[in-house]
Every structure is written in C-alpha cells, then in structure tokens.
Image (cartoon, rainbow, N blue to C red):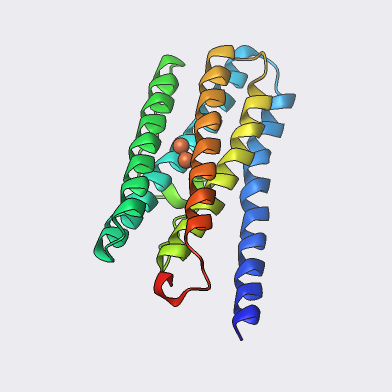
Length: 192
Ligand SMILES: [Fe+2]
Ligand SMILES: [Fe+2]
C-alpha cells in the first residue's frame, strides 16, 4: 500500500544518495593527497564544476516546478519556486565566474550534466511531491557544499567564502520548503 510505496521510494533515494555523496567525496579526497598548487587548483576547478552542475540542475528543476505549480493554480508556491530558481541561477553565475578566475573553464555542457550534479532532477507529480523533492535536493546540496567548504579550508579562501555564502542560502531554501510543507497538509487530498 501507500507505506510500501513510500518505503520503496525512500530506499531508491537513499541508495542514490550514497552514490552521489561517494562521488562528491572522491575528488575531494584525491585533492587532499595531491601536492603542488596546480594540482590543487585543478581539483578546485573540478569540484566547483560539480557545484556548477548541481546549481544548473536546481535551476531546471525549480523552473519545471514553477510552471507546473502555476498550472495547478498554486500561485504562492509557484512564486517561491521561481524565487529559488533565480537564486540558483545566481549561484551558478558566481561559481562559473570563480572558475574562470582560477583559469579554469566552466562546464555548461548538457551532456553528462545530471551525472556531474550532486542533486537530482526529479519532476514530482503533485505540489507536495515537488516540494519534498526540492527539499531533498537542497539537503544534498547542503551536505555536499559543507564538504566542499571543509575541503577548500585554507587552500582557497575566496572560493571557500563564496561556497559558504551559497551554503547559507541553500539552508534558507530548505527552511522555506519546510515551512511550505508545514502549511500544506499532505493528508488532504486537495494537495496531492
Ligand atoms: Fe544553489
Ligand atoms: Fe537552493
């Protein structure tokens, strides 16, 4: 029944999450053992490109959710999704700018975008589903950006500060979504 479906969905997500986090850690661990500035900088660019992919996927997901929520006349939620989409776009721009400052090339290639991203593109079928998927994606971003901040440490203070600011904004997004979820009772059929 409903609980079984929920468990299956949760199980699928948890296994994906493990893979996503493991991949996010791989480059960071590699960076921690390589010596030399250039090698470190290459790793920083690689890690930032994964954060860039994460942001682009977040823009696309929030845009999709914005138009879908508008379609089901949930204007307030639609507006929140749009605000988040625009802020994710701002994050993507800041990260891309920083990558070029480091002498790297920002990767906007749609090929492989989903696999470079730490968070997923999940369409969601109902308003509550969409909000939940966005919350999951924000929580993944919060975890992986926290790791990126710790990895950057004193290696690259400017990139670290940028990622700390973005992380703070992702926490605000997660908080916004939590509040939205609280206002929409998922047991009410009208919201599903
Ligand atoms: Fe973001
Ligand atoms: Fe976010």
